[in-house]
Image 1: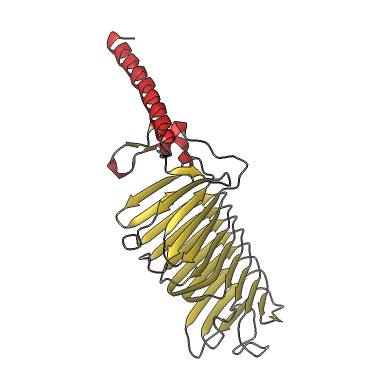
Image 2: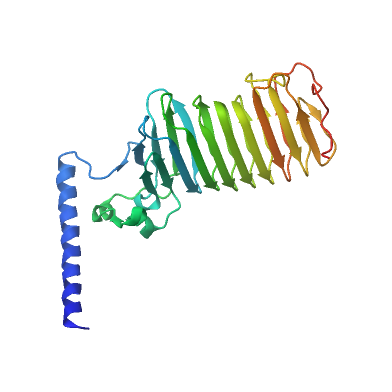
Length: 301
């Protein structure tokens, strides 16, 4: 090895050791003064918690990418933020680009530690090697809280092997959820916008929600709608098809396979379209009659 290379190698080792010593001293001093040098903390229950605050006015798009963890999006009155529990600090990466925030929980260790996005290289810092690691036996979770005055206009979730739940959201948001080996649940969602839901090997459940246009696509799973007082066939147009399964509408079962249910609302407020390749469709709305108001569930043409 050339002398110059040896010099640079020795210098690198010295700088690395100096960096670790500096971080260790800084951590001790901060701890003695009750100051945290990390954005992740261990709460009283023993969970490692990371919180990312979302500016209600400036953030218009939020993208979440996760695997092997449940993702929940909840409406709140005052604050918008993301809470992640029991993730190691290099198991995720948070990126802000303009008015768009992306949280990726599927990144590798080094791609999270060293961020090469934005045309440059960013190193999170040696201090994270000293961060207390979460208990691997404690369950991980991702919860997003969206305030009523939030400026969020687009929410995108990509999930593998983890349930995606959205509930109690009155905001005018476009929803896009793409899941694999995972269920999708929408409960009390009220939006004048659209929701595009897709899952493979999972179920989609919609309850008590008013969505201007809901499009669902399921491969090997069930689709169910429970109006729960939100709307009826007088206000909702249905276009539902299952290639290999049955359709049940207000207790009336279609015994044909494949089968479809098409109901055209006289006063359209919501449109629900669903295509299922293998699975059942169940709809319960506030129609007083046992029979579908337009047509019985019938074989698809």
